[in-house]
Length: 135
Image (tube, rainbow, N blue to C red; front, top):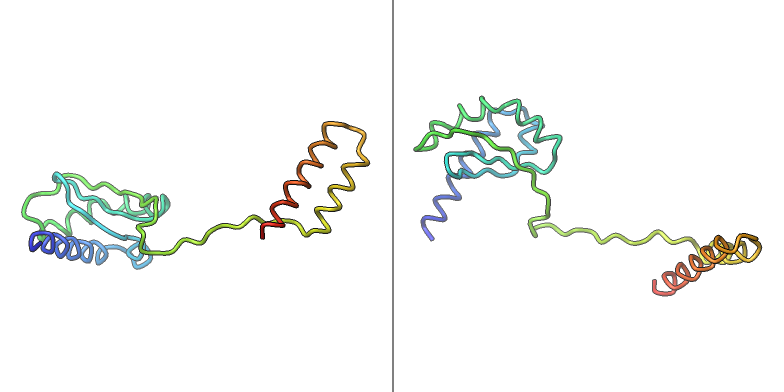
């Protein structure tokens, strides 16, 4: 447990040093870091910020050399693609038309001469009605 705690503290010191050499807006987007096999992995949450971080490759590597025992050969920027479980994600709801709109689609489908289009609109109105009834 002590070893894991020391690893976390080292990662926090390195992240703090990395953020110190970056502009403020870019430092805020730098989320985590990790040293693995003489590589420094820096995590951000967007491809846009990752591309900006790559411009500071040499500055980042130079700034952390005093904090690590073995030399770091490479910097890799990684993008966090899934939530870490620490934050809630909002569930998306369908944006359904009103009941009057659904009824209008159904009535309009009865007046269309194209059988395929008429059937598709009837099916759409039935599905929308079922979804609206569930809400």
